[in-house]
Every structure is written in C-alpha cells, then in structure tokens.
Length: 426
Image 1 (cartoon, helix red, strand yellow):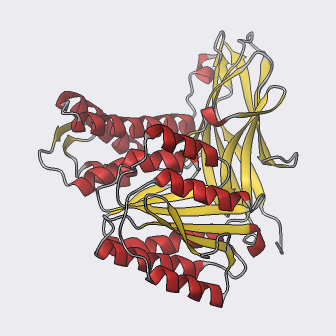
Image 2 (image 1 turned 120 degrees about the horizontal axis):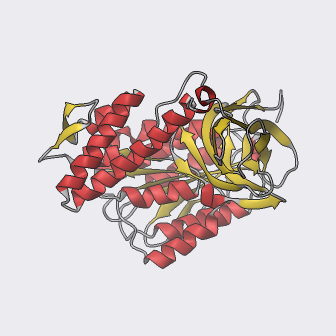
C-alpha cells in the first residue's frame, strides 16, 4: 500500500445524564474512515460464485454470464481471483486446476472464456459453495477477502449441513449476496450476509445484474483495511446489553463478541474503505449516587489480532437529580431505536401476512408506516406503499392490499434493514 494510511474517527452521541438509580447507558457511535488508497492488489482476493442450477435457464443464465464478465472487468491488476459455478456442489470453473489466478489482461480473458461456457443444470447446495470459497480464503490469510454470491432459488441442503458450512467460514471472508427473480428465500440470503458481514438485495430484472455486479466489485476493489473490529471495554460489574450496527443497515453484532482481555470484547466489522457507519451500544452499569460520574464504556477500533488502536471514543454516565438534564433523549439514540423497530415491524408484518394472520400483519405494517414517516425514511415508506394502502401515515392507519406482486413484497423484505441516516447533534 502506498500513500497515506487510512484514518478512523470515532464520535459518540449520547445523553450522559442519568436519574438517580438508573443503570442503562445508551450511545450511538459513529465511525468514519477516510484517506488511504485501496489495498495493495496482492493483499486482495475476489471470488465470484454464480448459481448455474437448472432454474437459471434462459435470460437469467445469459444475464449472469454478462454480469460475471462485468465483475471481472472491475478487478484490479494483481488481485487474486476465482470463479465458482454453483450447482449441487461447487465447481471451480477458473482457474480450472484450483487455487486462484492473478488478475491481468490474460487471466481476465481466460476467465471470460470459461464464463461464456456456463450452462444451467443441476441442484442448489449453497453451503458447499461457501465452503469452497472458504478454502480459497484460507490460503490468503490477513488480506481483504470478498465473495459475491448470486442465486435464483432455494438451498437444497439439509439445514444442519448448511448451518455447519456457514459456521465453518465465519471470519474467513465477507460476502455480498444477490437473489435474481423471486423464487429464492430472503431469510436464507439474509442469514448468509449477516454471518459474513455483507449485504443482501434483490435483482428483480436479470438485465440489471451486470450493473449491480459492476458496482459491488468496484466497491470491493476500493477497500483498504481488512478485519476491523469494535473493541468495547466496560467497568467491573457492568454488562453489555447489545452492540448493533444501525447505519447504513441494521445488523445485531451482540452475539458475535469474542473476548479480547479483562472486561473487554471484540465485535467484527468486516472490511473498510472510505465510508461511515453508525453503531448503537447499550451497557448496564451499577447505579451511582447523585453527582457521581463513571466511564461506562471505552470504544476502540482495532484490526483483528492487533493491539494497534485505529480510533477511540468514550461512553460516560453522570448521575443527577436535575430532571431537565436526565429527561433529555439523545436524538441519535431515539432515531436508531426507531429504525431497528421499523425493520422488525416490517419483517414481522410480512411473516404474518404470509401466514394468513391479517390483524397482526395490518398492525405491524401499520406501525412500520408510522415509523418510516416519523423518521423520514422515504425509501422504506415508498416500498411499504406497494404492500399496504396508507390511509394515514402519522398514525399508521393502513389497509392490506389484496393483491401484491412477489417482487414488491420481496424488495420490501430484503431492504427492511436499510436505515435513514441520522444527522445532527443530540
């Protein structure tokens, strides 16, 4: 890597004042990475995984081939890469003898020739595809390791087999998942993306695949720092209630903690380029007396396995009997609490609708409409309006639509975790 090193800034938004006897401390932590060129090509791995099962026939297969070629064109010279055809097993189509190739004009052309021969036929075993990527990533330790996975259908593996495969590759690479058409399961790809710190989205029209693949691969090529972790220290007697990413999407990291020393744990944040993300941290501490102050948490950004601190912020608690201070709610905390509830309300409402429970579906999707309106999340409000008729947005009064296109329902479900970014001081 040449040029200036990337830098990380950590800002904490909270109301530090607590009423006497209170024990719960909340803060929104904004992490902003700036500067630094993309990682040296030799430090990066890109694996393209294309579903070539029988259902990927016709336009979907043609579009998948074009999209894979578009992704190959975005690879920087010197980056290691491979292409996997996904059927009832993982078939590496380039390089054919296994391992990875180094991107240059010759290898990209060779890979494109192999991709042009991809044909639809066979089953779907996503766990085996992930395991194949994991073996490639294992041979590239310490660098930026990214996979792009495309499917159009549901996994055919038994759940324990799939779960074991997914658990086996956690931490080895990040993975962005795309579903083309409407025959795949949102929850399936969401589970993969959450475990592998990536994104999930629907590409309803196969013709849009190439642009999507191009954008994803270009973003991966712009990353410069691998395996970043949020390290949270809390005082003796305190406990962590949760750690969640809340922007640009909602992702619960609480269960991903690994102990990294006395009273501290690390939460994986994946790879970073020039970008900003927000995290909601909740800590329970021992109650203090009026006038007492406590360091309730120390948030540090570190590289996994390293002692180097990239950035730091402090979470404080000050107990007071002045209700004008303690009753103030951090606007950032309030905003993202609502955004997390919005994601839950959408997913619960859609699940109830699918189960035929119209009263619950109406109530939960109505609540989602109200939350989207209140927070100014216009994109989500627009998607909701394709599933329910909005009678009054502020109160969340809605009526379920009798006829909803599968693509509209799946788009709302897939993008339910996207949040409206909070701007402004508390």
